[in-house]
Figure 1 (cartoon, helix red, strand yellow):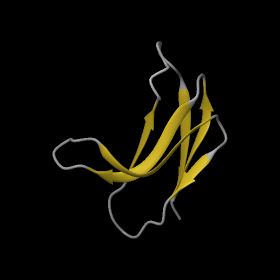
Figure 2 (cartoon, helix red, strand yellow; figure 1 turned 180 degrees about the vertical axis):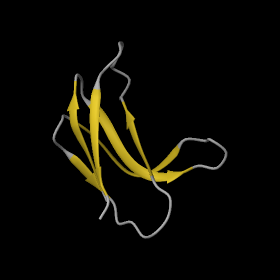
Figure 3 (cartoon, rainbow, N blue to C red; figure 1 turned 180 degrees about the horizontal axis):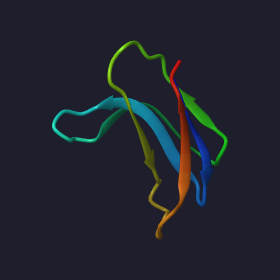
Figure 4 (spheres, rainbow, N blue to C red; figure 1 turned 45 degrees about the horizontal axis):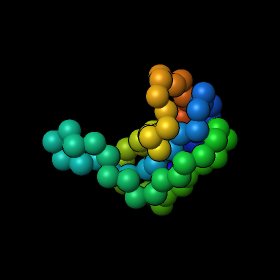
Length: 72
């Protein structure tokens, strides 16, 4: 499985993980803070997964972004 930050107004992070129980967000297994065009990848068997987009604390206004997820 890969998640690619396809476009973004600002540097953002993207990560792949597994959902936490009871609406607890996403427990990231792999993540990366980068500029658009970079991908993170994780080996994925059958199951539930989540992708999370985050900032490193420098973003102080709304930011537009697009993420492309590929799961064969």
